[in-house]
Image (cartoon, rainbow, N blue to C red; front, side, top):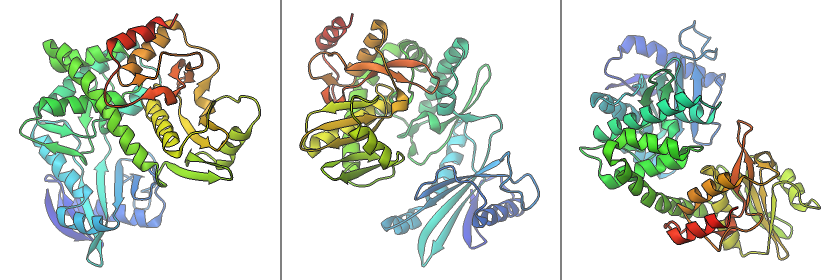
Length: 430
């Protein structure tokens, strides 16, 4: 990259191949459009923004669709304003690492420019201007969207395995290895690109333990994969060593879940981006912020047994927080429905699931056993499965799947269930 250049009150660095004068005009239009408040923010977060931007049309049409660029904004507060001002903003690091990754043969779209805005001597925010790859979308949207044809699903799993092997061989350690950090353009074979290097490092060599960590994080995020998908991916990734990597990932996955649980329990102690502690009369608990509080109260206080409500005995705050965190993590992995709140009082505790993700009925025995295999590969159960522990959940594809409804009985400690416990649990499912 080259720079910095002063453009409309910000310092900008450009990618190696970018012409200064041509890029200056694009940057000025992007900054003006951002100040106009006409751009739509995809993120709507406190510190992050992601804006669609059209630079192909005439001046003043930047908010038009279809967009041909993305503009990412990160705002800094506290000590991060000083620390990032010295080390370099996320945008500048992203541009630098993308160019280095490309130089190692890693397929990646290189940002056009990275800008930093300094106020009172401290970094206020940074901007990253990124061209959009035509016909490409992130892998998560592709995988979790409309069901893929069997042949396309097999081809994608194999292509992604080869792509992952290429990343590791090039020395990329991606500590946030998730499908939304990969772009895909459908085809035979599909084209794949690595994006978002905020938590990535380029090294001489990625160790086996680091690789297993990457693969376990990917497995955590690829909701809806089945055993065949995982085998096909690992065979393309490791060839004859696929069984070895199966064991390594299986050993790493419970440890990752335990780390996720500890982190989420800490997060739930205060109001965050998605969840908040909540007190309402005799009740206290935790709620998902995007769900209206009035709706959560109605579900809690409704007579009978409304869909999505699980009744539990009164619980200490620490136990309730752990159960809500456990339910949230199971939902992220496609093992349980999405929890919206957990309320507890001196008389009762109730866990509220999103009713749109719950379906009345019980899963078939094969579906229930498949779910238990995945669950007990990550954690242990307090006793075997009981009536009411297993149910049905709805996916966005309107297809019902087996789901686990009893997070209070899941023990997450960093180890999987012993084989004898797994066999006993499977025998209990008829």
